[in-house]
Length: 87
Image (tube, rainbow, N blue to C red; front, side, top):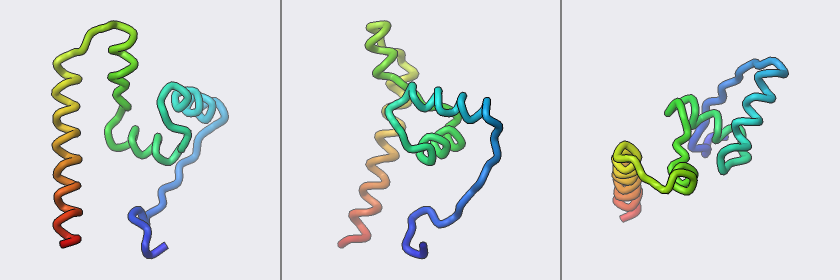
């Protein structure tokens, strides 16, 4: 447990209807890990399904491109940070 990147556990209580709704919404996104899904929703408030929208509408929105750029910058920053600690 001490070596975990996420070492704080949060617990929530839901009723049967809420559980089914969470499971349904999880089925709409590419994950089957409830922890990953709930963490993403709690932090970001949504999961952006840009590829699904592009495939269904054949168009890309500027907001989606901006968001992708921001996320990519975050990934590059994290990667540089990790690589600098390994040197």
